[in-house]
Length: 279
Length: 332
Image (cartoon, rainbow over all chains, first blue to last red; front, side, top):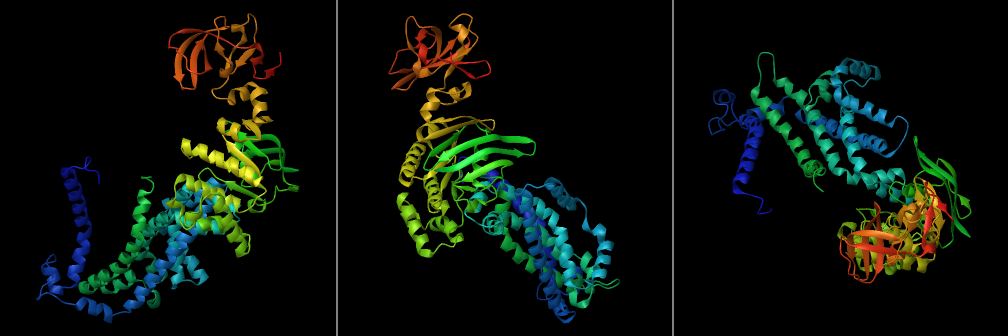
């Protein structure tokens, strides 16, 4: 970094602010984690204390493992999230490419129509969606969730990606055309690698709401064999009694896979956020 | 034999009429430069020839074939872009061989052509590098190499030098001229720089607002411009224009004299006040005010002229051009 432009006070203030923000953001996660390793009494007596020899207990994790098919829920969540992301990115990128690359009648109108979904929450259409799923026999299948999440993610994906695709040099695509590449090869081999940071951004924005969603799994796929992790954890929350040990343990474990996916995307993500600003 | 024939080519983007009735014929082996100010449609015309844009009407013929409906890769053309447009994820060798692989050429043919092109362009040591590891001039050479390996009927250059610095631009210009002499293939070259046009072209096409203003060899256009626009566009510094009435009483034409045709003469027709002097060593450019018009005189050698001085400039009567008020050339 440039010596002349940094002064120790500024640097300290900047790091101070960032550290404070990190602490605030991580605090709830931290509380969930420490309490998942404590006995029920200890959780209520001193929620903020670290687990010690007295209060340490794995009872929550044991309950989670015993009760319900936790690994199946886990697998369902994973399948739904990864498949939805795949379709959102694939179809979003294709639509964005068409909108930014080709001149056709109604191009702008189509772009606006696709962007409209950003403003209208998909949950408003829940009843209609449920009726459609019943009619097509997709209720209680993972496909119901994958389709809904794909639809939910597409508007923002098209909006962000088409902006990025417009920045990909026309000359490059035209060079491909002159060299005899098909439009599909140009899309997959030339354009997609160049908008990878934007794809990672879209993936992260979509991943967390899908992973955490309770609404659609509860309505469209509440059957035992299609329960997602978030829905599965609800069995521990009762109207009168809540098994906090189990809930906290389930939540702690649910953080892991998102964390892994996030680490995979984050390097790309940072480039995606800054790529418009620098260079 | 003609390499390319454009007949009444028009192009509109929606309501904007970009190219208006373009008729051009290009002979085999000719180096043709399209030149004109920004937005005159020269790049669009090149893209129509390449097949990257469809012509709204008119006929494009490459060799003997009408190619209006032929995709770019089947037209027998190769193009070099202003931004180089190298494939960022492929190394130099693969950048050059991609088109041949798409044509399903045998491997030994591909290798031979890549070797030949990289030898011509001194790229042999860089074949395994990625475009991001090359300098601007090297990237431009790779882009040219990518065009050469296809052995096209026509090369298309879209302002290939505008991203290079001045020294490199001159070198690359000479290389392109050398390449044309070596290959003998027709080349179409788009630029807004009249120096490039004058130095490279066998034939210059001057465009303005989507129309062809004049076609001819560089010297034809320089010595015999068809109108005031062509006269003012070619030549550097640009031709001086002033009302002929300022020299001869009662003349309502516009008079044009090239800066290099003006000389110091005590009884000269132009009495001017010097506003700026550019001393280049070999030449001295005098920018002066002549009755409210700015005129430039290019004097050979070094002259001791100061700003604010009054000068008297003369010119030979047969070096003067006359134009009507709407810019058409008048022949006496």
